Image (cartoon, rainbow, N blue to C red):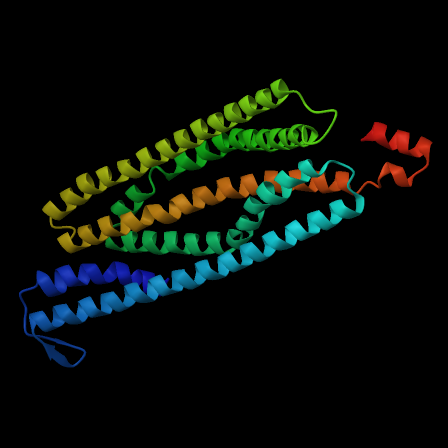
Length: 307
């Protein structure tokens, strides 16, 4: 976070102290600098801060990816092992679970703790920088945030329900296709075609709702610079805000929207992973029931009725 703050503060110093200032040569930290020398020194410090910031992000993403892939592999091994020991459903039903449904859960594990801490810290650092430049601009940056926090969770709940419906339909499709492979009780093509159409309808509805949420968020992101240009421009004209500070705030807002999007996306990803994980738990609970062929006839019949 200190490195991030430096990448926001340095452009303001470059514009106000090195480019726009006419007081040169100047003394800084006991050294005398000409204008061009001072400009180059600030630019090199800014470049070093940008490189350090990018390197830290690279290391974080690398460790997130390693954690996610490790947990995904362990989940797949655990589900497959449980199915091999106890499962009685067809192999086609477990394939979508191991291949498709586990991956978002494992992928979320890499972001589960790092993403909210890192992105919230980034958000607060950028907000602090904008608030220090001018409290009015800082308030304008978060003026529309309550609208997003009120609407996005409500829309996400319906998207989650559609995601679970899609997962269940994919399993049914796997069973239908599995029954049609080398079986005398092959599923009719009409049933498989109907399943294809249901999956298409569900996925299109998910796309429609996701893109609607994304469109609303993008509109809100574009509205905030309107306040910056009007309010910030007025403050610069009145002499209450330097031009370099306004440019720095506009540049900071470009980075300010990124952690907000990541945090809103984190909520969507967390809810999706939660729904999938609960669905996988129910699937594993089904496979934990002993196979009827290992039981006596009456117990096996009662167990099938329960299932």
